[in-house]
Length: 250
Image 1 (spheres, one colour):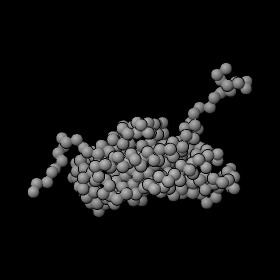
Image 2 (cartoon, rainbow, N blue to C red):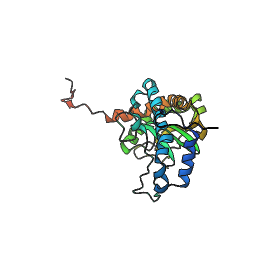
Image 3 (tube, rainbow, N blue to C red):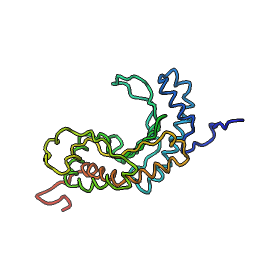
Image 4 (tube, rainbow, N blue to C red):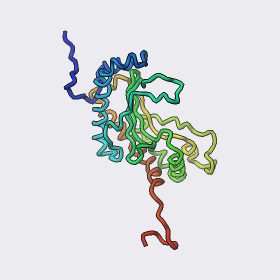
């Protein structure tokens, strides 16, 4: 019996074939250039192109629920190559393919956004602010002083809790400097990251409805992502100049 083989002329579909997971399993065992380079075309056909197709389909849907995160698919896709310049682990390749939808204007920083990756072991879907920079961290913490209750409600919505688990906040052991220790939102304020994550079986990547699954999860996380980005955006806005006690619009 003949097996259907994908040709280079066929457009990539927004899901993966079993060959993609097989490639990632082998890459984990042979993580070196000697193994990867002769198989680079296979990587591009079985992983990179389907990944871009998934990203494009999700991004198209984001026009409705997350328009500030719409960007070219190639900009959302992470490279397979690891940055080993300052790492003790010198293996050159990641063993997963991943994408990150950052907020417009925050592409070169962190901010809050949407993420997913496919490995041979799992599909990970996540959303939130992962280790934001110092100024963004301060902006979120100050916002939480007044908005911790509303933010907590976003994390604890029943449908959100059914699909996601909350990030390990990588919290400080004591309140950040300048924040009241007895504040009722201190458990959130001490965090250094905020977000939601879900881990699905690797076989989810083979489902023709993969993009629809991602869209469904991302929609659930959107209110939380928007809430985290609001104080970051506000902190970036230029302060109005004041002249003789009056606004600059006088």
